[in-house]
Image 1 (cartoon, helix red, strand yellow):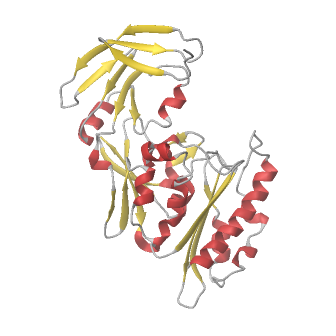
Image 2: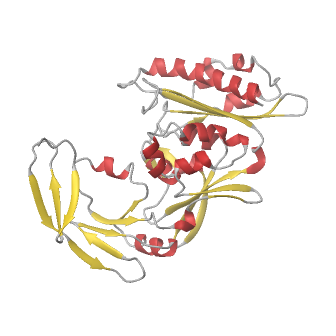
Image 3: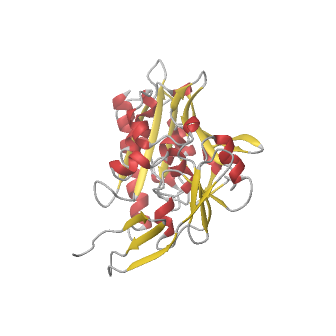
Length: 326
């Protein structure tokens, strides 16, 4: 019988690995250790220790000492390992219900860090979140959306992270919890480069906070890829537009992803659009010089020139979608 998939089976206290390429079977001991402090059972493979705390305080305590890795949805964690096994302490935070879900506070909409993208899609959110919901539908397959978390998408810090541009356009902030307390940062400051953030190893991104000031604004998200579904973007754009009582642009935020080491807001464009009529044709005011802060690269998906030209078109279309939908 031809083996076409990989399986991990636990039998009689041993782990059995079945190779998909050669059908070879390798086994190694599965050592089980019961932890104190309410963390439940954990198991240890070669050079690794798996821990599953039940509360945020327990998770923070486990991360206080060096060497801990956070496992949330696992949709980025496992692919990053390649053919390697996890090493060190793996802190599985999926049981921390206190940082999952979406609530509305007086000044913010709070999105728990462990909230999945499927939960974002289903949540009854203000219209300014339409762009975020559209981005959520673009994050992998439905299975990935069911497992992948908002915090994981941000902390992975991929330049092509679909969740980042709409949250940047919403002026989102993040809470980072550690033994020292909770510190709050604008999302734009958290992301410092390709796969780089200001999150310390002992911190958990516990929440994303979106100001309610623009909750009635129109928003749009557009993504360009080599195919329609299950694709890493060539460019993506999120726009949020608030009109005043006279029908002019009161405030507008535009963010572009996949064209720099981190997604970027187009601040000069935002300033130039204020007070212009919020009606069809607004996108024609976007010029190539408005995108000069971007630094696209040549790669297997597209050239830098193509990315820049495509981004210009996407920004124009996103703004047109906002004025049509307001």
